[in-house]
Image (cartoon, rainbow, N blue to C red):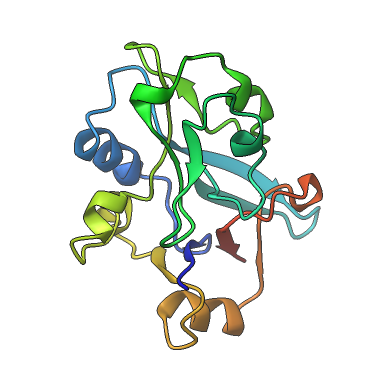
Amino acid sequence: MSRYVMVIDTRRCVGCMDCVVACQTENNVPEGYHRDWITEEVRGAYPNPRLELRSERCNHCANPPCVTCCPTGASHVRQTGGVVLVTHHQCIGCKGCIAACPYDARFIHPDGYVDKCTFCIHRVEQGLKPACVSVCPTFCMHFGDIEDPQSDVSQLLHARAHHALLPEAGCRPHVFYLT
């Protein structure tokens, strides 16, 4: 069984926001909304602080609280790849999943349903990379199957120190940041 993950090299990210624009364009995200964003965080302390730039989004968790709290089943985990998705026509816009997500990765679309990153699964099914990964000018973003030990993502996670956001939330996120 496959398990898709994203690996982002924080040493290479320059915060250009090409990933954000590519996502908005590819997924017809309405103006003023976003499925991904850039975060700046200072890690470390004087005399060796380091600015970490991160492209953030839904973490497509292995233990997603947004799915377990959804009263209609609109939020679900796709069997192939383990991607967390929302079936728009089943969503009643109750916002329970928004409150449950510790990553603040969901929003109410102007049409009344919850929207979020899908890892561009429609592109992945065609053998393409997610839009954000395909446009990154510094090649800091990687996408693939963590269950395949030969995949780029598996190799990177094996070779480099990395972290995920809010591991203490117990969601088991599948977006990793190389440090």
